[in-house]
Amino acid sequence: MPTHLRVTNIGAATEGRDLRQLFEPHGGVRGAATYCDLDRTGVVGLVEMDSEQAGARAIAALNGKPFRGSRLSVAWAESDPPAPFTDAAAAPPAEPA
Image 1 (tube, helix red, strand yellow):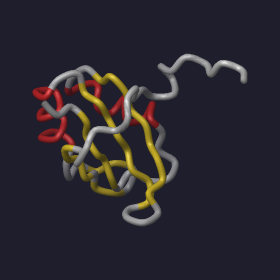
Image 2 (cartoon, rainbow, N blue to C red):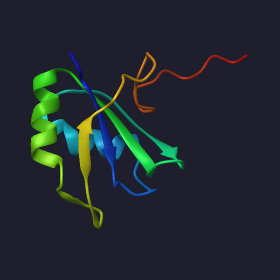
Image 3 (spheres, rainbow, N blue to C red):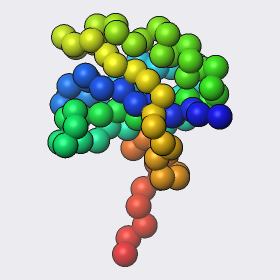
């Protein structure tokens, strides 16, 4: 059951915490992060919802909606990101080497 969403047209300044805040009204968010995909679309967001139903609600509510001067593109991610997937705000600090 998919729970990961791919979000594009978000702008370079968007961070995981921005996506978390945007998606939380539509269901529980387990993690949210952004990365730069220069080969395809620029900055991309990944959001892990707590259920398939929450993901479907978020897609229905947010896909095509205006966000920071662009229209969001929200869809199921083609594959799950490597585990564990968390946003920086929820991740524990790294152990010193």
